[in-house]
Length: 263
Image (cartoon, rainbow, N blue to C red):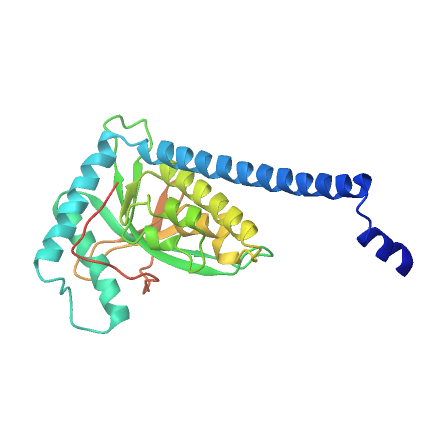
């Protein structure tokens, strides 16, 4: 075997040289095909994200404008919603936004989603806000609009690839939209995160999986009002709402002011 190996290494015959060249060509073709496939995937994700983000209606646009105005007013006040601890301050920011939207005539509330551990994902909870709009036609179901104040950072990764970070950069810092549109955006971003981890040969963290991210905004949530608004709380789900007891809440994100970018 050793003799054959050295003979092959020292063989400069046309057949041996052709064998080496064919191997190199196959490697180049495989690398080129992989690069082309990767490029096509990321181009497709950009297009899908663009389509998902563009599906907005008049109701969403109106709530978006009023949310933007509430954020501007909060920022013009020196970004000092309260002077208490960091965790409490997050709650105060959400309370402030909800109060401003309710003063503008919206049925806005603080939403707390909570999900149990499963074989695929760990348990968790998330806090955000929403607005429920009653349609003029009473036969139709209420329209729910999700408001996430720190949307982009929910998808940021410390070791994200250039292609993935470029996709994240197209997300708004503040998301205002119906669950249907949010569902499309989450699907695109989770597929992109999975591809990013695969290309970097890294393990996909369970809290970045599609099921986990969906649970944050698209599962059953408890709607509560700020303490300064002593009105009954309700639980919102996909089928309707019912009375519930208010509960304490915690946020899992940071807010950035005064820059405002909503969609």
